[in-house]
Amino acid sequence: MTIRDVQEKILKLKKENDICILAHSYQAREILEVADFTGDSYQLSVSAAKTNSKTVLMCGVRFMAETVKILSPEKTVLLAHPEAGCPMAEQMEKALISGVKKQFPDYAVVAYINTTAELKTICDVCVTSSSAVRIIEKIESDNILFLPDCNLGAYVASQVPSKNVKLLQGGCPIHAVVDVNDVKKAKTRYPNALLLIHPECTPEVVKHADYVGSTSGIMDYAKNSDAKEFLIGTELSIAEHLQYMCPDKRFYHLSQKLLCPNMRITTLIDVLNCVEGVSGDEIILDEQTISQAKKCINKMIELGG
Image (tube, rainbow, N blue to C red; front, side):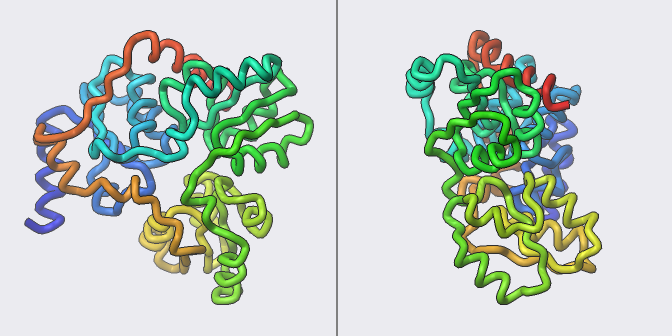
């Protein structure tokens, strides 16, 4: 079968089986083309809550599928590839953070959405990379315990100096591996390109950016900018997707190291197997976890508007 043959079979089966397909922006183009909704993890969760489909198939990583289940507990939620995890989301366990909370009882616990459902149950509010600054500006407490990504937390702290932000040593191992030497090499090779950086990169890298923002923010900036050349400082797939969207512009990778194996592990055949009912890992969360984890997500929705 060709890629198009597989795609047509997926489109037919998802309609017959009442399946809504969600695909994170880091997924391969052939998967994005069969998805009902694409975007970042929070956008996908909101889209899933609005769909009438009884089954939701997440092409992404586990914490994203868990977030969909929290917001849509009545739906069957499947993760396309059972081994698609997120090292950042799995770095900090509930027991560890419970202990840290006891040490800092007057701190509001702010969790990046890239965390497990279990960890969200003891956090005060969730944030995304695009809403973090806005939410921390609005939060009542002046003392913030931000987790798990210390790089995103450092960026937020720089933008909201009125808050006392305490960071823990966690984060995305993919974004964090990029260094200033990568920036210098890329800027030397593409001197006219604007540098667009995800705040999960280190502060030393972020300070060289022409624009700092979430995946969706980077894509919107590039599409709307009058500039013609861009260095993309996030997962490699984004430069590829932007090149299709904006054929009159040029997009370059900041570093070849920005490759997320957990995002790339899902294939179009995995998606086909799921809609056929052959595979797919169903997300099961107990009612208490859903109820407690949803509180910090609801607070994010309240403050993020």
